Length: 128
Image (cartoon, helix red, strand yellow):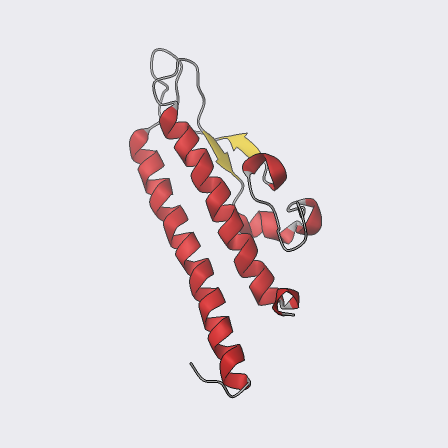
């Protein structure tokens, strides 16, 4: 019943996108010393969500994508400055900033879901 509410679907999609983006950031950090590795990132959530079912396909009922290869398109991130002499374009500082942004996005998705649940409970007369 609650999965049909657009705001709940959006919160689920936002949380899934944050998880997939965190996986990309982790992969970038893990390959920070790999020669020739290029930093990867996902499209912003807004553009992915607006693309609709084509941008975020369901892997099974109730899910809107769970990993980068299952519903989110990765792309090489354009990094300002130069790559290291071995061709690696990962900046640990930039990855840490991205990780904080992703954490905030995930917390926002949880807050949306929590507040929606609270409103629904209140409308049913159950309070908190």
